[in-house]
Image (cartoon, rainbow, N blue to C red; front, side, top):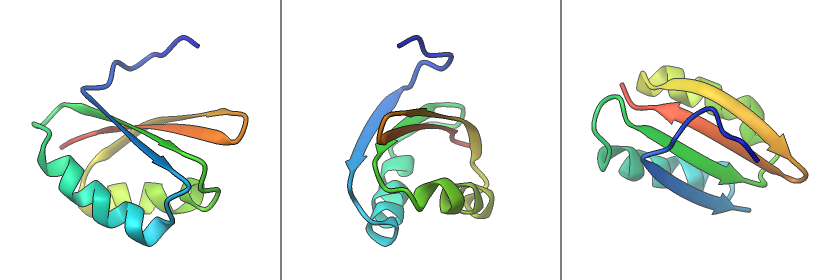
Length: 79
């Protein structure tokens, strides 16, 4: 698998539901500096629709999403 983005931190959310994932994301993003990239690995299908809104609300930039089987890989730049 070739990646376009090199993450500064990887968060493997697995099957974590959206509500719990958002709480974890908020604390995870605090550990990053502006411009750093977080990679999220998730098998939660609803995240595809909800994560873009969360990023806009938190003013982070959703760079990309790649799907491989049941897993989705999200790349978020901290703003």
